[in-house]
Image (tube, rainbow, N blue to C red; front, side):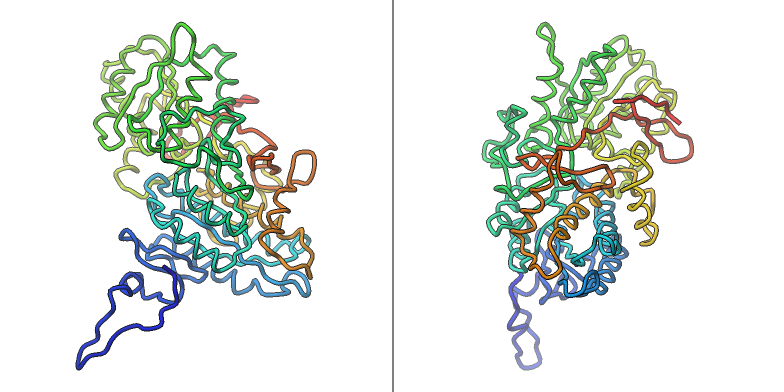
Length: 502
């Protein structure tokens, strides 16, 4: 894992022999002493300097973090105060994140910058170590163990709604290290397995443990869980009598994000005489997305469908619907696609050129542009509907100073990253300058952010937590992704107050 290397090679006459157990470190840019290694053909581990895990797109943000770490010295915020190390545990290369992983890390870096620059509130300066779990979070437990060895005060990020995240959380909780999840929304990923939502895990992988809760009292999340998002969507849809008819869902149920969402949608929208029809596609076979669109096209009148899947296939689904409608192969007069927060991916430029082509094609299709096809969802955070002052103003100022692209705020992941880091910094800075900062004390401070009491002022609003570590201060808005010509689309809020598309 990240053990100290005591011997690098064995010399023979005229030959330098590299030990096989060193190759995983040598192949990642020769980082034997810094806790970086190769696993699953990717560089994973932890970096507090400019090392970017052999990912060129991360070079700039990692360099900015390294510079901020150099200036976050003991006493730089308050006389006698020690710097505190916080880790960003992430999957920086997941296909389910797309370009948003970079946005999230930039938001975390902006949160570090804001915390250390705020002389009125900064007591302990924050140093940041970035920990990469890999595309499938294949190194989640090993990297979590490495962070525990380094005695970090807290962890932000925590990856996606996956079992591997739960495994990493178990390692960190055992060492009493608090965690703030930035973009994790699935049921089960809290202190009690989301019991208050009465989740149904029967379609989920029976070997997964998150259904019993994760983090043992050390896990919090600033993202709104899916049950809250679905409730908001129902409040918007029901008064207007927009009746859902279909659920677009993957045929495989090994992803907690989808397998916990599906029963919640049924419970909220099924009618006794007519349950929602499940239209299934195979995530491993893109042709099945088009076939699913054909089935929905056969329905007459105005149609509403709940897209209960990761958004990596959402552009293809929207484009397939639009294409078939333009060819006269559809019977609907209009179609409303409703989804949870991952649909915000439609506002983020894709890393994969094929996915980016699909995204742009869906957004520029005549049926989307004229409103025949509409996308409605609950974002994690949305710069177009959040107040311009307060936390969003501080985030934008930090983004500008760091030279990050302001368009990276659109997906919401940068905002959530900023809020995760701001929450941890707020907890750290409740401790006095001469008071030792331990992970247990930071956890106690996080647990003190409760409704009606102390709160953290984030970019998405005030942040507090309930007894299970779920966000408890507010609910997400319902937004529509608006048509736009020649530039990235914006959103308009539909609920709780409705605004028109720009």
